[in-house]
Amino acid sequence: MLTLPEKLKPFIQLIVRLWIGGLFTWSGVTKLNHFEAFEKAALNYHILPETLTKIYALMLPWVEILAGGYLMLGLFTHFAALLVILMMASFIIAIGAALFRGDDLDCGCFVGGKTEPVTPKKLVEDFILLGFSIYLFIVRPGFWSVDNFLRVKEAEEIKKEPTPSPDEENDS
Image (cartoon, rainbow, N blue to C red):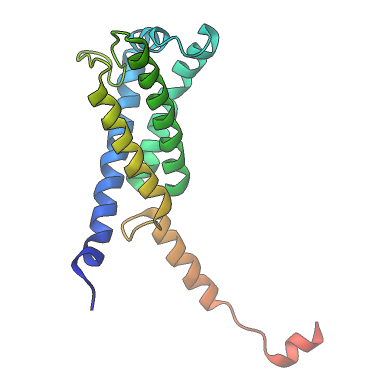
């Protein structure tokens, strides 16, 4: 008999995957639509040299959109979750450094309208997102994912392959 949490596990995973995937996709799109504001926010952290920060700012929105889209589809779920984990780690380092220095910054999370200051609350939010991302990385892709569909399809194709008879194996 399944326990309630076991029955809910596929739903929880789906909700977490869609939530984080949607969040990162939206974040990447807003950064692309307001790239100058995002680049300025990234430069204000003073973590990396200016050239590396500009490269990071140029690549980050695309990586967010890619990882977010993959998570929403449930395609390459472990890879997408790993990308999110790495991004969350970089955000936590940047926000932690800004808080340590006492900088009054806009986090640059969702640029183009609403500013979000760097606060301890933002750091806690990022740790929570990191935890959920680690969860997605650890668990097997859920029922409602392209990964699961492909895994099931592959298993069915393997079952269809004829198994050699003992006489055929000895001939090899």
